[in-house]
Length: 273
Image (tube, rainbow, N blue to C red; front, side):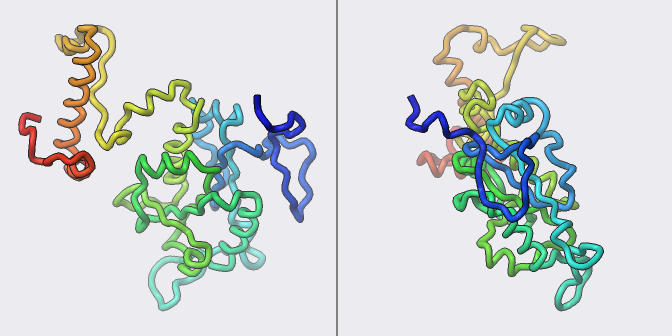
């Protein structure tokens, strides 16, 4: 039995200077993990996040999406959100005052514990550990970068954490934001249905995932490894572990070294891998 009175509904109640519709098609839910996205392209959301497992979880209220359009916070009649870089240079930079107004508006309906993340190629690389950490919190506010970036004073003032998907540059942060949300939401309990599957995936234990097989038993002359059909679960577990180690050592030496360091192993051992 829950200690929460039945009179406490799922909708979130917060003060607002703007009237809200009494019958909203997408009411804010008090307990659901919240992905709040500040973007110039709000219509890009939910995008692929509205499909498959994440889409069903979104409709089921296991998580919620709050897309905040940056344009209405812009300056002047044309709602300009950017200006030329101080000191000269190519491109445009998102203005501090514009982004500040958008953040103040957006954060009024987010828990203080939810971090503010800026999708940026110079940020810390996003990984499974970060996704797991985010999934255990109340949600996150994501800022989708555009142009040459954002005024550094916004990052400093709000204590924003910069996050990158990797060593490449996208035209904007929307695709990166969707990838981050997908990787995080699928770790929320009940989203996948079989939570045990996340424990065997790549990066869950610092290794790439072992090879997978299914029917037919023989395809184009290639059989499923006999050990997987043996029914001996101990041998299968050992085989899968060794395959994961082999793939990690071959394809991601950086992960292999980190894994060995965490487990007190010599990265040059097991040469047969």
